[in-house]
Amino acid sequence: MDTEKEYIIKIPNEKQLEQMIYKEEEIRNSEDYRQKCTNVKDEVNGWLRVTKEMQQQLVKDFGFNTDIECDIACNYMRRAHILYPNNEIFRTVPLQVRNNKAKQGNLLINDQVKDMLLYDLNNNQINLHNILNDKQNIILLGSHT
Image 1 (cartoon, rainbow, N blue to C red):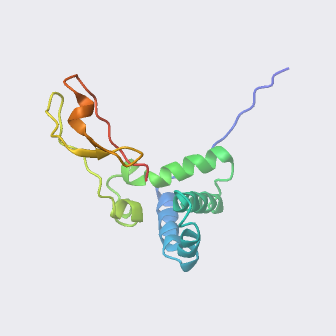
Image 2 (cartoon, rainbow, N blue to C red):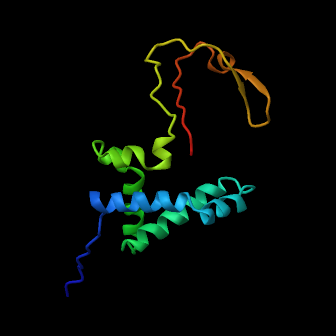
């Protein structure tokens, strides 16, 4: 007995993404969304949870209903500015793209890192050079937001 099944997974196209991006911007500017974010101001990353839930509902409203379709559509929406770099809508409309201050760093392999003051999780001061010593090191930096 053949038990293989064929699955079709919907993936948003560029035009659908444009519509979703405009709708997301409308929702982010709504009083309801702002209030939901305010309500979780004391929850660590509460606004990220609220935003994720909003995006999931948004893509479901556009017909991406299964868990995998929802995840893919949300991912495409968040990366539309990378997937379609020549589409001005994706570079100018999404709040998270418009206000992104991140940039590529300028350190190269074998560059000397200047000493700086750091803080550990207990708010104790530590000098970077005291951690690095004279060994080869790899420094990775990033942000969760």
